[in-house]
Image (cartoon, rainbow, N blue to C red; front, side, top):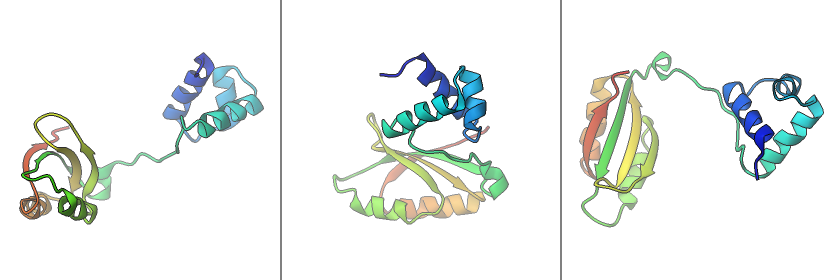
Length: 134
């Protein structure tokens, strides 16, 4: 069970996963060693599963941000999974409930690559496309 201090540690690490244990301890009113023990416990429990850098995709040359609802016509989705796993622009895919079978997030350098992707995708699924404005 997580207590108030564990939740405070999680909040602080979400804001800055690179802070030192001394800095973290000061923010949650623990010593550096106590903060380290708490973080280790949260990692062992699987609450904290990793640390990551957040990047700006547009600065990486991927300004076109799209979400697609995928609709399948049959129950065998293996070919779709193989296709999506081979695509460099697919960020993540979620199996969902509701009208669509999957929610896909992707980023593209231009609308030309998006259009090429959609043309290929039509061999595996129908889709509804939404482009992120901001």
